[in-house]
Amino acid sequence: MKLLINVKISDRQIDELKKLSPQLEIVRETDKEKARQEMRDADILYTFVPPGPLQEAPSLKWIQLISSGANHLMDRGVDKTDIVVTTASGIHKTAMAEYVVCMMISLSRRIPMILRESEQHQWKPGRLRLYYGEEISGKTLGILGLGAIGREVARVARALGMRTIGLRRSGHTGAPEGVVDEVYGPDEMLEMLPKCDFVLVVVPFTPETRGMFGEKELRAMKPTAHLINVARGEIVDEAALAKALREEWIAGGAFDVFAKEPLPADSELWDLPNLVITPHMSGNTIPYMDRAYQLFHDNLRRYLAGEPLVNVLDKKLGY
Image 1 (cartoon, one colour):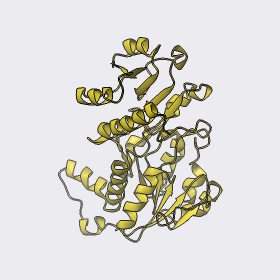
Image 2: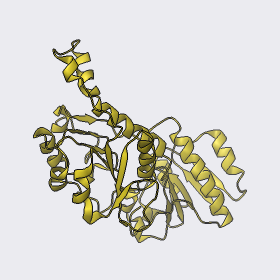
Image 3: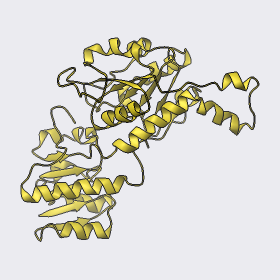
Image 4: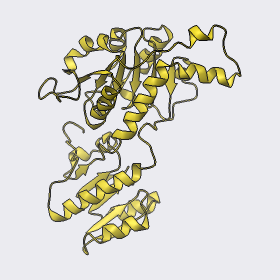
């Protein structure tokens, strides 16, 4: 049974995997062309992006991703195959919850403006009035997507005194009691948005969610509200976002993801003073790869023992 690994992994971790079964032939190869050759007779692939077309790997039975999103595999036609796919859903939740809280506090306390003034070596006149910020305690956070990350954000936000409401595909059915105060379905988004001081986009990226947040949704938000996107850039209409920020339909936002990445240097989003831009790093912290490995180690043990795997991709839903 051949296992191909084309992501970062230590010698110690390789040795741990070898101990799971003498049947395993483990190949670690990060060179794309060499890995593509190795994939052709691999049974298992531990990866972020497969090094070649899936059609070239007739023996491939299982792919373990180090990412929570699988849209890049869906684009490669994995839904047309019998390959089982498992994702790294859940390993980002601590890092991303901390990022979201960091952005909410920064936006509330006007930290982006203060940093710009620090670069200019000045404090503006009337600073006591200008720097009066808000507190996030008592504010309402609306979470679009109540998966592992959305639920963890809600837990942390509630601990900071925020009210949390959420939207999910299944709506009110089996509402996560104790996680959010209210649950809405997709057709109730425009009812939910005016209640929010912050709106977090954390839904999976699927054909259903592509472009789901546009001008209509932005106009439904409070003029004092902020929009945060840590999901995928294609979910939010960037032209409508730029217009909303320029014309102050909303107070501002923080975006970690964009339709085209890296964000082009000529994008108008760079010049909007009420938008914080980060380079798709909200889930990236030092423990990330170790958490991904631990998940894979457990899933490989399960796979070899014929037990159910964790985080199996639903190819119809796309997550």
